[in-house]
Image (cartoon, rainbow, N blue to C red; front, top):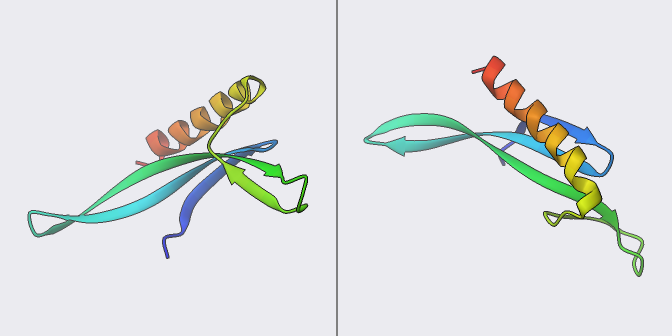
Amino acid sequence: MTMPKQKFKAGAIAATVWGNETLKEGEVVTYSTVSLDRSYKDKKTGEWKQTNSLRVSDIPRATLVLNKAYEYLVLNG
């Protein structure tokens, strides 16, 4: 299982930085990806769930956590 390198949260919005590896021309190449999620509580079951759909009011927080993820990637190579 791949573990996240870093996670940035603002309320229900989270950006997670992942470390990945692939083979390219016989050599292992590492690269990073970022996932963006919004947590919400299902009213019927009471369970916490995640979605990648955002409401208009989520966009400022999404911008903030994505900027933090970008900053982390630039400063940590």
